[in-house]
Image 1 (tube, rainbow, N blue to C red):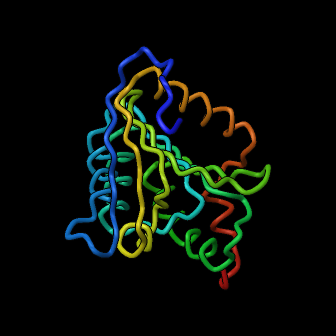
Image 2 (cartoon, rainbow, N blue to C red; image 1 turned 30 degrees about the horizontal axis):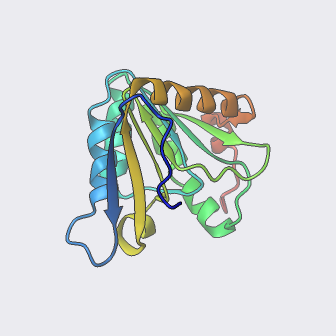
Length: 178
């Protein structure tokens, strides 16, 4: 009963990534950096918390500056006000690099996905923040499957319709406190 017969007939290559404070390597963060750095066409990211470390920030900005279509989706309102305000401090830099940042307005988006070039998808418990990369026990599944990647692109684009695009002009008008 714990292992029922599957109806899946299409082979899909998957990889399980785990990380935690007891591990020598930050394997999920390294997988993110590798996927982002190898992107040629597009990168779509959904995360409820965006507090990237320097490696992730450099990879995202470098991808955008090299002409890769980079889209980031974060919540419009967060359940963690301090984390939300801290994540907004990264927006000016990534917008300047050419990343499109969308704020999901129809509730709190808690998706943690990364889709690269219609070839690689990672879904799991990992937020794009130092706590997830270094301090928490996390697990992601990395899928190497074009049809599954397309399904996740479609989900991203459907969610994007429920978003507001963050514009640099809006950030420039924010109060000094913000």
